[in-house]
Image 1 (cartoon, rainbow, N blue to C red):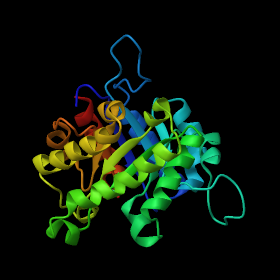
Image 2 (image 1 turned 135 degrees about the vertical axis):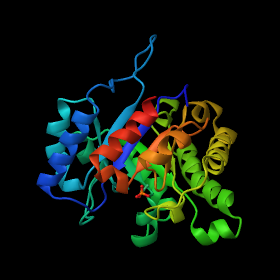
Image 3 (image 1 turned 120 degrees about the horizontal axis):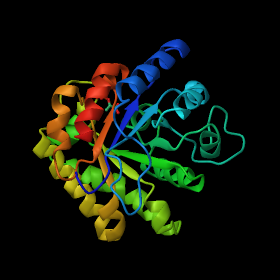
Length: 269
Ligand code: PEP
């Protein structure tokens, strides 16, 4: 993990209130006070870690103000594939950027399974994020039955390939591609307490990098591939020690300040 600066992202999903969201963010900022989370430095050693919080849409603007005095960053949990127009309920990438987001999660398995986000729709969301200068975190991962059938790599490659083809046909530049991260999130591990062994996760992460590398070697080298699915303080260090695991996307444990801070510290060490 040493070459690429890791990211730890907290996905708060549909949880909390205005007050509890503020309190959680403050507790995380306080818990990380001793760690340099500042921007990457050219020509010098960069800080060890990037940390971002992804609250529900309605709390973004308020948390942006709160986080402005910290080094933590803000992300959204989803984004529209369209930039503007008659799309009731949607939130555009430029709006997210305007309220202070730097990151956005795209293709989370809950969006894919419950809200009809197809591979093509997810590719559209990645492109929309890039048009607004946001860093998309592209989630990929197999279901339990796909894993049991031995189809993990086939599924993950398909999910990646649709997005990679869209980057090519959209003539997305090398500098824009550097904004993208991938999160490998086996669906069967999300919120279940189950997770692959670090070696099993590493094998998929290495395949993700190789899949990207077949189209774009430079992008693959720099690409940060996060792991998500029942990461806790107790398993984070072993997962983050793997060569191709460049941090984590954290769900349940991101709602507990102490757990989340310990996970961040595991990624920073
Ligand atoms: C997630 O939903 O992105 C996730 C990783 O959840 P959890 O950490 O709760 O498994």
